[in-house]
Image (cartoon, rainbow, N blue to C red; front, side, top):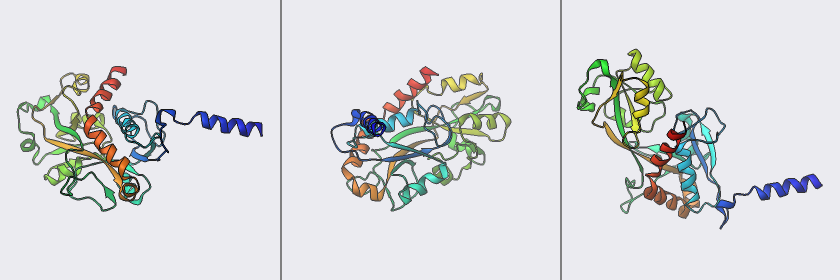
Length: 265
């Protein structure tokens, strides 16, 4: 009996005091189970600490949006995330721009009912090439990539949009470093990756000693939304809308979190 009381007391003491002020509204956040520093750290189902810059941003967004408790983090293979969201096995996951969206998925909408392109995280997609290929730095990347094979990370939200553009995408590799290894071996002709803020790829390129360079012009500007299960949205519209607004206001925090991780590596 004494042990049971002690366990109950421990659970009470461990309650998330930082989120006090209202009843807890649990939100299950799904994200990839792959190690993609500095955004997502660790492999498999276990969430490490620190978890990565993107998880830090999501935690801050939930904390600032009236859920009153930390998010429940669920790591899944990239191919399962969208299906899990539609089925209600998770409540929220990041989703990139797509030609259409399932009715089981809720996204922020503008006054006309269209997907709100403002309440999104924005990334610039840049192209990396081998310096020995002597591609002029000011080359138009869309023109250069026609008919070539592009390395892109598995499950990246921008991959469907690249295929819509008629580009040949090889997304078999799990992260940027593996794609750059394929580039050096000649298995792909170029690699695309997000540039969250100017200069954030400098440390990566430095490791390759000038053998890999970045084209000056971006390929596209991509958007990423925090998508919710539609039934979850109908149950908690106030909190979900607050989260979308928080991300719109604080989107630049992702760059701050990325710098924090780079400074501690």
